[in-house]
Image (cartoon, rainbow, N blue to C red):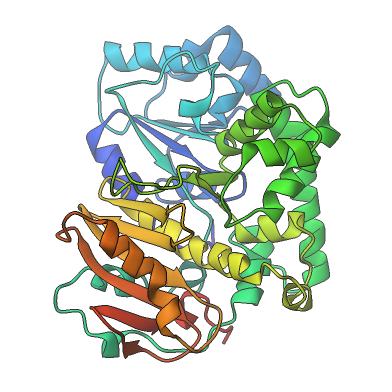
Length: 412
């Protein structure tokens, strides 16, 4: 376990183990769940259901796997019925921190799960690395927290050069981040996608045609950062609407995509209700969309959406570190006004508009102004922010322009 990257998420795991008997740590494969769960308590017994012998034991005699406590059980989505045995063990002898269960699927979304362990388990989802975490920058997300402060000073915002295309292509999976060559990294992502299709997906559900599913994955990657229209996606993938819906659910169950829900400020207003589609790892999304280099990005008309996807890597980490108090939304009305991201913390909102250019004009705050106008009261709204490639400066009506460079810093 030498030379492993420290995870900010460790504090979440430690807190969960102090409170309830079961901690269920989920996330996409290769985010580092096993490394995290084993690193801080190496003596804890560890069994993985990727081992066919252990899997057979979990299916035939699950209680025997739980005889020794505390214990780590890895890839539990392979035997969902194991959760019933965990429930029995907890009810027989309840003690905080006894069970760490990890899985490459969100068990709450799985239809075959025998029990949700309500009242017995804490559910955590580990995101892949964001750039600042990979570079081991302490307190790196403090600027996002400061946006909620009444005494926020735009002059204190970090200003450093950014290279978002490089981080978009690298993503946040540790094995991919350790590969310097773009070509070699492309091979890794191709192998990851193939493994998901041929192994992980089959564990989650029966899929009649893997080529159909793969085609939908590629088309979904091409729609990153955009409103999700399932009917159009199904048509382009030559699939029925129910099949496309089921495949998207499987991608979400596998922790590969996020459907960001819009914030409803006025239930009677003309607001868009469709979610925004984002991938939990920007490198995987870029690979599926055929983006192999920074040059490929410059030739795309949708580069702005990919900038949003790259910055989302940091925003999802910010949310994951305090999942009870923090949420992410977006907002769009039927007139086309949009706020790219809304950070919510303890009932307060900060609006984020994402711009690739270095110049900010009045039109860049039109979505923020429309959002303000839609509110019956402004108590929850703290401020509006335009994240761009230029310098920090104040704007009108309590809005500020701030650089996004520190979120995707240039490599030292």
